[in-house]
Length: 101
Image 1 (tube, rainbow, N blue to C red):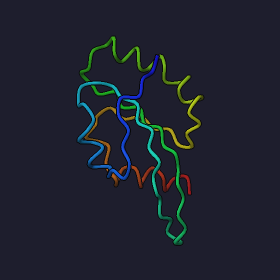
Image 2 (cartoon, rainbow, N blue to C red):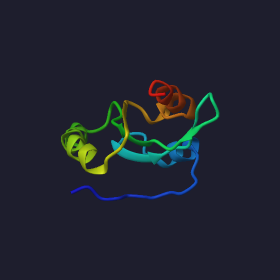
Image 3 (cartoon, helix red, strand yellow):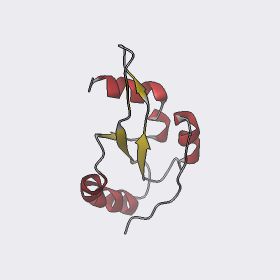
């Protein structure tokens, strides 16, 4: 069973990163306001699976095993994986979203 741990509104990527444990896997569902180069705005729903190196193998297996089913259920438009909470930055997300123009 997957349980909602926390929910935030109007939180920056940096503030979100501070809320996440550095040694435990987490799923993050993020609605992000993306400003395109031509002035348009879009609101991609991003699913980010963070599985830090060094966390307990049992936790990694549990999260990895549930990931595909959760992806299907939540209907996210963009899906990403990270190996460290520190990788989660606004610059990283913007760069990833530019790929989908």
